[in-house]
Length: 43
Image 1 (spheres, one colour):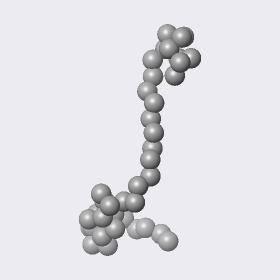
Image 2 (cartoon, one colour):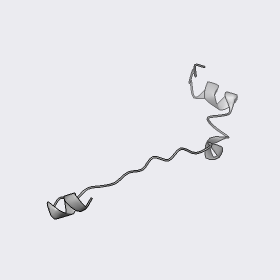
Image 3 (cartoon, one colour):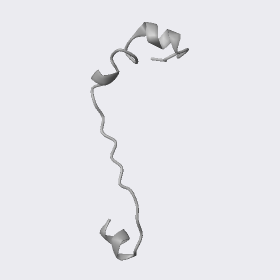
Image 4 (cartoon, helix red, strand yellow):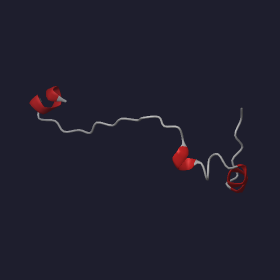
């Protein structure tokens, strides 16, 4: 980021952090929702 600043460039820093999935429990971990969404997860 310091180098970009020195060069007069802008940008965005993005971090992807894994979680346990509790926010998606009612969807991604729900077999009925998966079926209604037409998804076919593979093991």
